[in-house]
Length: 141
Image (cartoon, rainbow, N blue to C red; front, side, top):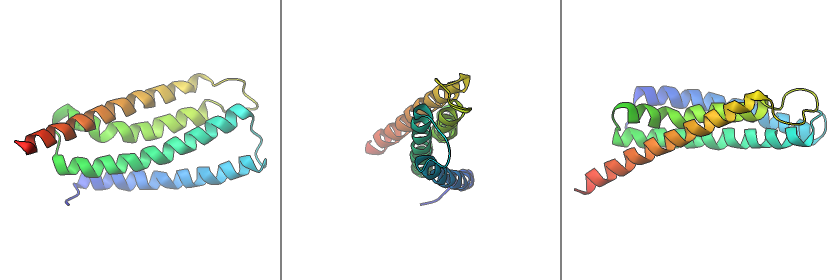
């Protein structure tokens, strides 16, 4: 298996982002132990942001490694390679930043980051899926 230089670079960056997920886990232990004040909305959003970050970063790495084997082309490649990693940043940011402040009753306008991330996730998954199905069909012929 050959890893393209741009893939190695992006995977390295994503692995560094996983360190922030690790520190987020430590933050969550402080919230659960009530060393950091947080209301129920914040607790739920913090947990969701932490979980989405970890899962989407790992999914991004997997997708990048698989895409190197099928070499998608054009705009489809750009979206397939970057959609999920971008979602891995935007979605957790939306969860965390939309409930900042003291005792918020509802998410603020930064919840838009969550929806931008969801759109990026959908586009990235579709592009990667189409690339893989196309490569699979071509390989069968």
